[in-house]
Length: 508
View 1 (cartoon, rainbow, N blue to C red):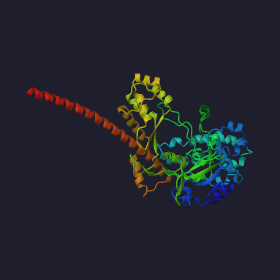
View 2 (spheres, rainbow, N blue to C red; view 1 turned 45 degrees about the vertical axis):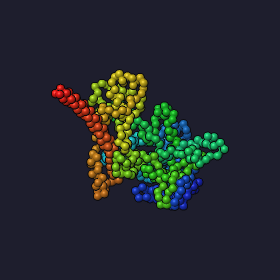
View 3 (spheres, rainbow, N blue to C red; view 1 turned 135 degrees about the horizontal axis):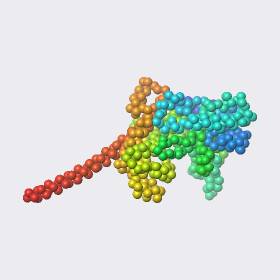
View 4 (cartoon, rainbow, N blue to C red; view 1 turned 180 degrees about the vertical axis):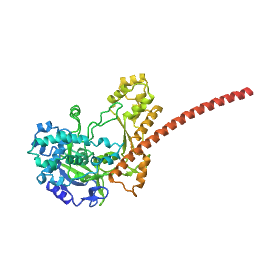
């Protein structure tokens, strides 16, 4: 990594090479290691804002021109940034980012590059429908190629087969997905200073804090009634033109930036010991706690579940879990459950048509997916939705008039729906939890390929959540039955005692 350090310093980046190094770390790929004991608040390196690579800093958008940039749709989503990076890479040593671009990975272990057999191992998980390969290819053919073919002065025809192929498009998109930061323009001003004109350290940190997520927030989903939910916009695409017009607060694609040096730090759940901060002209990587010599310097990805870690970065986290789960896993793991499964379950016991309630829920709650975490508790939103589906007509009319969601109170009907939903969700996987545990037990003796091992860890983590939640539901059902049975026994016992007393009195 000496070449990267030399390039970084030649571009006015400041790095303390006596304090850290970039090295290959077993099990973690390349990462940053502390060369000596580092105190909290120590600045590891400083990056000039103009050294970040985005559609704001690359000269390509200016060369193409703003009208053409918008005409080809490069101002929406990530296509513009992908093209900027591909173009800068095609410039070779004449690009100011040449030393940085040559350090970026040329292959990924993410599902975007898996074959169909390996992808089958992810059936049922939250990964498959979010890979977005088809959407990315539509963007490549519909947005990137037209502008490339229209400007032979910027994109010589002989360079297309080397620098602007579909494979390189996927590769560049994956670099952004796994390594980019959300860097907004500096908003400092009068509010950033205290009454005496100075800026204290605590205030500075508060103003400088960079979004912990290393990639753009994913686009949401638009629910359908009883149909299987489908993500409408792939993460690489960002919001559609219509959505962008409707939502003035939507993320600006120009805020997505590659940040040299900062993206060399790895991350692990709960391990963050350094964080990226920004000032008016620079970004700084600063330690957030003391780090011992030889320890890895960890940034944060925001502690996502293994399904997202695998999809974005090509790895998974395994750390000790807390009850109700046990063993190793990712404490941030989740399972996504479509609202359509609750509708299917409710239809079995409800003779009325549910479409009005479904439409109202989608309008008011705007939520067609429920999320269960490693605490294995039923989501309040799922409980509220299940209660809505069973509301009698008069109560339903009151709820609709008040536009107020039903309280998430668990009752027998909710538990029945939850049991059915969880069972249906478990059946979406192609293997059972017992199958997965058998494979995990044999993994040391019969090692799996990296892709299959990662898929196994992701789906097993999700199944543990589902089975743990189902067990919790069954316990609640048993407690309810026991309570009913206990009440009946007490009533019978009371009645027998009264009869006996009367009998004794009669005999006396």
